[in-house]
Amino acid sequence: MLIGLDVIYCFRDSHIEKKLAPAFEEMTNDDLSYKEEHYGIFERRSHHLEISSSSDIIVKYFYLVDETLVIIAVSIILCFFLEKKYFSGKYEKLLKLSKTEKTDELSNELEETKAKVEKMNKKIPETIFGCICIVIFAFFLDISNALAKPIIYIYPEEEIEVSVKLGKPEKVTTSYPQYTYDGWKVLAKPTGELTDLKTGRNLYALYWEGKEKNILKQFKRDEGFIVEGKNTAEFLEEKLAILGLNEREAEEFIVYWLPKMESNKYNFIRFETEEEINESMPLEIEPKPDTIIRVMMDWKKISLPLKVKEQELIPKERDGYTVVEWGGTELK
Image (tube, rainbow, N blue to C red; front, side):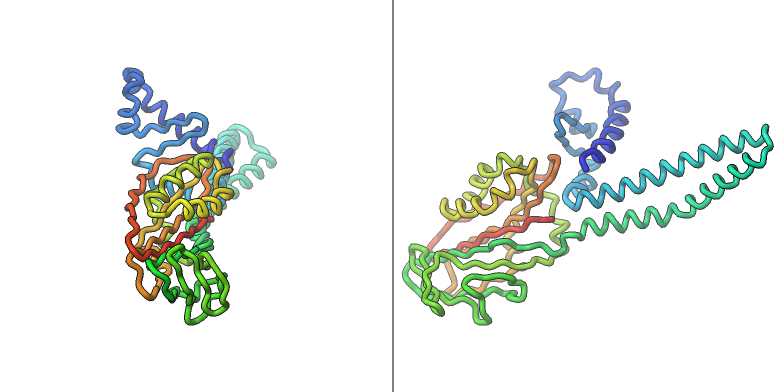
């Protein structure tokens, strides 16, 4: 995969460098930021990629959809046009040669080559259309993503019975305690300890998983964070504190996701907004909490870093009777 990317970027970088080299010769290293801002320079050192404004959209979505399918589509087009160029060149040479040499063998080869070129010319539209379909399929490949381990903590100010209902129970694939038509009913203590009123079992949280089928999620990748895998724990500690998780909740969040993320070269990470979370899975709680904190992380493993607008996170403060939920989705 990366070999294909490197070939594409080497051609591009070489072209840009030739065009802009004269203008940059007079600039010092102190002007590096100016160069990048005004000329859209791509600096590639140790596989580090920064995206110019003119290419932001294409490259962002190239890396944040299924990269393999996109590379296959690009490779098909490149191979097709390279083959077409070869036979077109061969035909021109044979045509010139036929003006001075008249042999049956040369005439047959000329006709075969001409037929090949004409056939390839006719296939240009369908080849391009087919590759476009592959790229479109790549965008929608993860139309169904697993919403992993949403877990719900309840902290009342005094011991009370609490009813918790998921607004779209048809999405639920796994739950514990088992989710039923009338939701969960628990006895909650200020310490966060829960007792399932149906089974009498002691719990510390409610757990569910489900399928997320939201096409629009594919296109909400214009902002977020690019994090090196090795820096994932530190990044999550900082951001989860801003989003309102306490240290115990943040630890459980990190312990669950870290093994999936820290070995990656880079991760694209975005936290869903409160409106997006409530639209995806409304949460009905009685008695109604004073504070509800819902943290849902969308993330995707990527091979190279890219520049995206850093997401602005809204700090959450706990006040009174509080319910906290966290979960996430790995975008395939």
